[in-house]
Length: 80
Image (tube, rainbow, N blue to C red; front, side, top):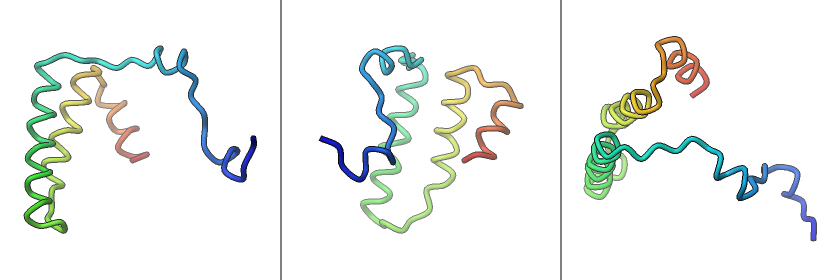
């Protein structure tokens, strides 16, 4: 059954999803989880609170996790 949103949202098949390079290195994921908990705690206290600095820390950990170069980081941040 096709609906009005079928053409708007891309579909990812399971086999395509399994090919995505998802890294699970504890040295990075533990740090990301810790920062996410800090963000959630902060937002619980003040939903409008500024968590940009913490979010940038996550960005840096992800860049390092995937081994992005400075040029690749600039591209990502320009698109983001």
